[in-house]
Amino acid sequence: MPRIAIFADIQNIYYTTRQAYGRSFDYRRFWQQIQHEGDIVHATAYAISSQDPGQQKFQQALKHIGFEVKLKPFIQRSDGSAKGDWDVGITLDLYEQATEVDKVILLSGDGDFDQLLERVKVRFGTETQVFGVPALTANSLIQSCDRFNEITENLLVGN
Image (tube, rainbow, N blue to C red; front, side, top):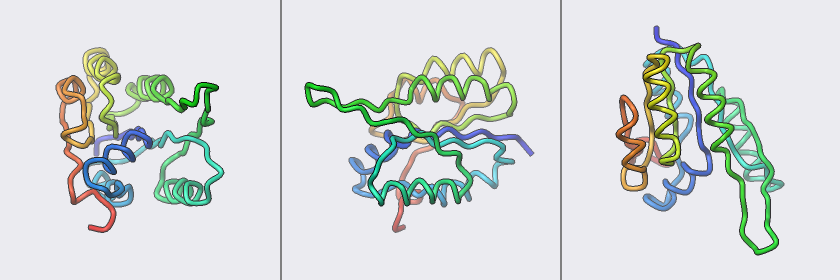
């Protein structure tokens, strides 16, 4: 069975599924689907630290499913803008894990990851997959992966 590593950009998936469908991504259903494709040997969810009980419950649910949850503090700037970006952390972890697995799966629509996936394919020969909301996933990311999986109704909570 192929060895699989999963990298979930929680903020990106949350906002894109909310914008496109008004619903949340079903991580449990996703996990069950991927288990049929191979052996999940590594799975990390990248999120923003929060004191909100709902967010903490969600993060515990991710851990129960099988994800390692990495948290970064939410930074509120003096101008009112906010920052909580995991792009570099996801990039480093995915690149390091790519030599240990047969397939990497990225849950994100962020085009900043296109060069990462290209590099992983060329340098290590690792298969790359992306799960994203079709209308809100960068074309460059879709083009850079071996397989793009559309997040549609079947991967949303309440379906």
